[in-house]
Length: 399
Ligand code: CTP
Image: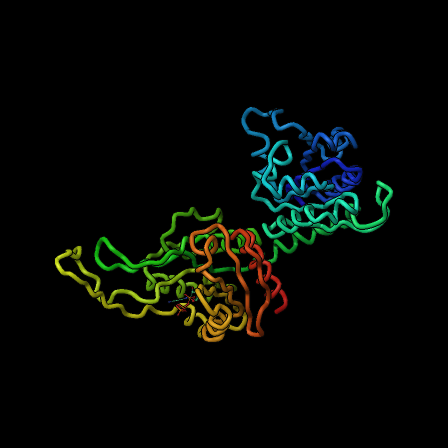
């Protein structure tokens, strides 16, 4: 917990008083805590309580800009390692689920790329309300986290589910989360990403629709999990994540050389790249002129880099491949896993509109040699990457 920057969002419920104990325990464990309160939360407990416990200014108003050098909500959003909203009322859950930003807390949560966790607290019937359940499901499918409320006597007099999890339970979750996130500390990981391009002449090439977003998200998640990341990338329009070593390549043959050159030093290999299976047999020296009615370009097979990795890899190296399919996803993916000696394969159906190539979202199923490991609903690629990395961490730490 030492040095972790945690933002605690407090909304208007009686459980707000429990957040004081949470903030105090986080500070005692060395976390740097910032608190944002909604106006309703200030009806239950004062900002001064949290200022005293966190030893930091408490934010309640989007427009109270204390430091002219920064925009407060963006600054808080950018610098957080984790957001925990405790208590989370039905109102904040619904607002975030629908992208509303009308106060300091909602604007900051929508602006952050840090993980966000909700600890709901409300009346049992509100919690069971189908609208709230749908909003919670929506948040979870978008990669937000949930610490389930407990059952018991509620402040409104009812008995049932709706009590905010105790501060100790939330604290345990936060500790577990940071430990899980650091699951690749000291590991070296190689990620390949993007397409390859195969020249035909000096101005033209064959390629595919890969944007590199999935591979770059994996590289970023691995770096956040403590790994030393090498990213071998085909031509893409994305900046590499900070602290990631990027090697840029164009053709499949160059990608193969770069991969094989560093394979032996790696603990983990993730082959996200969409490698061109064929390349033109002859690359024309000069631009091809359009003087013929038809043009035939003969193609020859590129090396299958994943297949070579599968053959060469040591038992202590963990290998994850991807399968882009338009039909028979499970069969093709499991065949590739076996043929290429992979430990896991992440399969996606690239023909579904709105997911896969170029999109920010994806929907994948992960298989190992035994069969299906997990099925992730449609979610953004960064959340999928985080799940893949934590699965790799679990499997590596089991070995
Ligand atoms: N791959 C590779 N080298 C190739 C082709 C694919 O390393 N020449 C890797 C990809 O990075 C991916 C996995 O193999 O991790 C599966 O790629 P995919 O394109 O789905 O399948 P292919 O093996 O190319 O088979 P097909 O095109 O027949 O579906």
